[in-house]
Length: 284
Image (cartoon, rainbow, N blue to C red; front, side, top):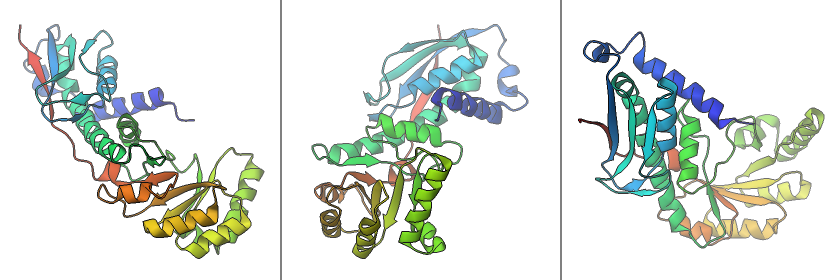
């Protein structure tokens, strides 16, 4: 089971090491180590705020005595000109954490904002929006956290927390029936508590899956809304259903109207644009 706090600490320490390296010579050259200061996180674009908890963690790792004043919380709507938080710490820590904080928060705000747009589009329908593994290497933790802040759900975090039999698995294995049979045997032999999902590409695939059973969820990949409705009639609620492929803000309502359980959208993460934030010193 993923431990968010432990993984966040690993991510933050690696990010600080990447940026500071052998030393922040710009800061060390002109800022005394004893100098104390404060800075404000200034919002420069409208959207959904994400990452203030991460920012606090970054500063606390760099300087455990740093203090925070929160003006807004993760998931709050944010407006250009507002302040998200105030941090009080040594000036050296503020300057060394600045870029890591902004890089994390700007990316997370962009993802949360785009996710929120999708979620709002299908508000009132039973369908839930989930993300995918189409993430930035070594940054998945915060990208998926931003999806949750934006109001959607996480799919599997990695290859280890679900069995997902996609087209290449099926083709390499030798077919739908064989893939399902082997996956179930593997779960039983290893005594694993893992759900099994299988991708289908045609209505005939769905019929084959339903004839053998042994799966918890069926993905209907690149199906039109009309085809999804046909597929749901075959499945008859006997397992979870997920629509995927080619679903956008423009057509998502048509997919939600089908009654499919989940819609997975990689674009929540890989198409999100970072929002503009800045960390500005407060001069007393």
